[in-house]
Image 1 (cartoon, rainbow, N blue to C red):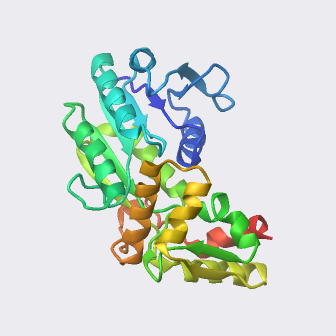
Image 2: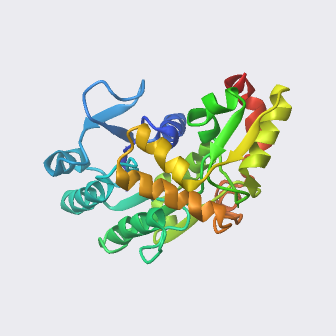
Length: 284
């Protein structure tokens, strides 16, 4: 049986790592891009736009296994509805969706609720599915907080709440196992975490020890975080989602370690200490 894979979000943290692994396995896959020439080197491509249902139907034609990753934008729920409808119309046989830890349509936390609602769309689509629910990424320490850490302090409204942050390479390792053997994972929801619960203060302390200079974590009021996001131009809906995630972490509700990465890949998830050693140059 054929297994033609299509990867959306291939330019992002998770997607780029998935593409590398599919290429290494010589899998039959392509990536969806907005315009011709946007695919990673050596990868096939097809054009599609989550806000253009007709383009999605064309992009999904002939696809057996579809990896869905939506950007955190106000239109995310509409993008998901369009993608699920197009997958049904195109005859996609399996959907693998990158969601978020704690996703629950009944949750009072806005970020968990919206992810849960999208997951419910997929569960109720009639298409076999697998849901991946990762925690926050280690890579955020480089991509989003790198400049602040270089300046000596990470400011966030998360108090001493801890979470088992995960390396996106571990998410990609699990995703590729599922994408290449979808039937073995049909109907499953996998919470993906790193090996240990860590607070922001513990994470920046690990960075400080590695780079040999002081880095502090500063717990800021939620109002200050909202003001900062607003000045950055974040839409109100996205701010609500992000602040709800901060609140969940601060309350301690995001803590917990899952065995799934090791169960599926056969090795433990990468730890923060190794990640910090690998990326020390980013904070110097």
